[in-house]
Length: 363
Image (cartoon, rainbow, N blue to C red; front, side, top):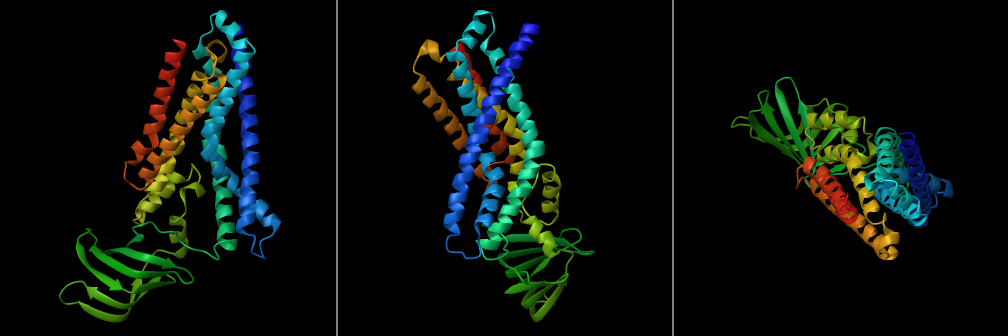
């Protein structure tokens, strides 16, 4: 038992060391590329100093690192197992009756521990840094605040005492907040459709929408035009801006509440639900990368073809990563159900990694 724990601790330290080495190394390389790209984009902007560019590159790091994390696990796992195999340490351990699955346990434990820390601690810090980066990008590179719209435009829902209103606009501009063109669908308190109001634009002043040249199609008695129609609202500019926040600027802990808030004002929460489910599925995807790393690097000395095995491992890892990105994009576009888009590839990759290791290692 003591020998078993000693071996487990040793393997865990080896994997953790190389994991951190690849993590820090890739982070440094990414930072240099991000700074170079930002310097290119800001080359003609006189008010953007080197200090601003360095800060923007630093703030953007967490979002970029989150995308390459599977490769960090894959590369560090392959290098660790290759190094231990080349030094004969794993071969000696196998001759003593230690199976490949026991070799994997320390790496899996370290990966799961890091995934937990990443989701619960690093992600909230990274979301704040990403929000700061986007604020600086908007200020220096986009020329001012804006709201992002999906292909379906902006949908807002507001509820009053005896009326429910659903507002739709194709375009949004700021200072003051203006929706154009705007359609207001009107329902009673039981969500029975009553009619609609069409206007070229609606401007938010305080807590009132001012609709210019509004055309009413409520019922036979109220059909017609009005130069200016005022619609009271409980929505504020701050609430609308927060509702448009990208998923990567919201921490794991705040996502469930944010999703409920989106539903309350009638905005589709698919992107934010997908982000939450992706974070929950992340440990499975990272563990799958550990299995692929082991399958293609544990027995290199006995089977030969080090370069081919390494290339095969990187190809499989890249394929899993790319397919997962495509599927999650389909989920964000609501082409696939959110749960299916977030979980299907990590689960299949985990099963595939285990099957590959069983085939190559015979258990």
